[in-house]
Picture: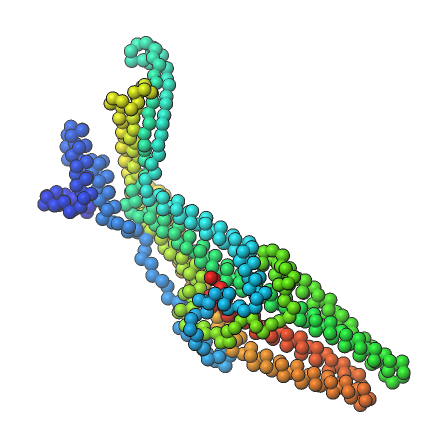
Length: 511
């Protein structure tokens, strides 16, 4: 009603500040001349023109709530304490370093490239982007009229009883034209809100693809390192078996000579059998690791790209600078994806609100019609039709209100999911930093333990050969050394995996 007042006020003052008002007034006068009278109330054409003016004044506005990014429910700084190192400084964030620069192992680089080309999860993510893009284009197309060309022909015979001339007639009709069918004037932003929601869905799928790529790069590195560690463990078990067999033969010779007891001989046999058990176990793990690597790469892995053992040259980076949480977390693709979904849910509220207001749809057609095909484009064959329609919801049994409540709750759910994504990301980075702060000390301690255990084994073996100690001391030293060596491989693996994890949780590998 206020827009009606604006239109009348412009007429009174003679101002023509709005081009839409001029067009509407002209159309209204033409309609009055055609009908032969000037109605006191607004005609359909006037209502339509006021609607067009409303659309012109409203611009691209919608009824969606104004979006405001929720505050991050995490501290402004990373945790501090004995488990954390002092934050290092870097020239650029870790997320800006391409994986080709972060990983320096040439075999690993080739495997990552193969995975990015062949992995099915990444392929599905890319196809999802194309689908969302097409869905957005469908919604965007709803903002514009759909113009269809048509050509019709009708042949009809009327009997004498129905004919106006009193005799049977055969009627031929031909028509061609262009028409607009059910074009909605988006006065209250319903179509625009749905288009905005589709756009955010599309942006979310793009961020989802980046998340999949980050996870894929990290997963290839994790499987590669796990295979390398298990191959090194298998090699250690095989070397241990050789040593245990030699020790067993020595003990058997001493037993045959009456120097060693049967207990010593059976204890030596247990060491041999234990090594054989580990060889079988690690052989299985190596095969399973290779299968897992082939799956994530998406194709059989060439033998020349398989690692023989752990390499300390995984990355050229020595120190990792995490940056500030506000900078790191809001750049992670999974968080950007959650925010896009939140924006889409916010836009959907605008569409739900617009359901309470009238919808104006236009149906029009212009063309030529004739009862003779030869005269279709001659003479007075021009035809046109224009049929605007206004639909106002009067009684919907609460459906519109329920739809609005669903949209608002979907927005609230999206807010909670967005905040949870930030909290999860903060925890992942904090855990990786805590491990990073202590892993070097753990590795140094494990290396010292392994060296000391090796020396103890050497001394116990010498004392046994001189008859000072029994074989039980040698057996304990062998087991301690083997366990320390296996644990050293595990700590080295954890250290390399930590670098890969930090690269992933800080958003690296998306490019």
